[in-house]
Figure 1 (cartoon, rainbow, N blue to C red):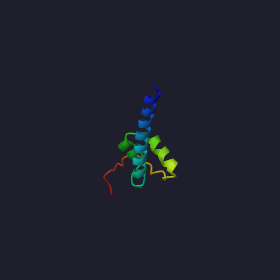
Figure 2 (figure 1 turned 180 degrees about the horizontal axis):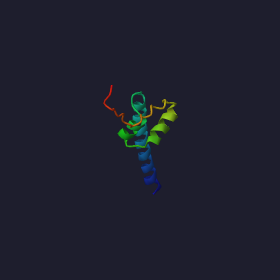
Figure 3 (figure 1 turned 90 degrees about the vertical axis):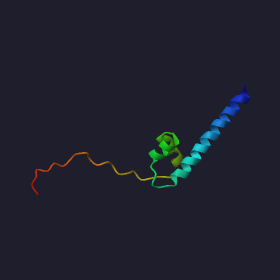
Figure 4 (figure 1 turned 90 degrees about the horizontal axis):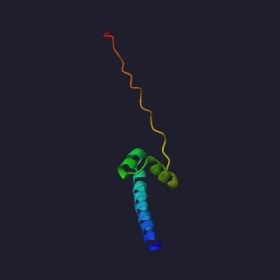
Length: 77
């Protein structure tokens, strides 16, 4: 029974390593967000952040969305 479990763990490790290599390659593109990389690979944002941290990759915090208030004109210019 131990041999089967060992093979399963090894297969899971290979899949994880493959995903991490893909994430690492995508992190080299500065235009990609962590969220877009996570979505493309079917993994969580936290996993992308963990991979980036382990590689020493940091990114500045992005801009905050502007308020969604709409300016109303009274017709005068």
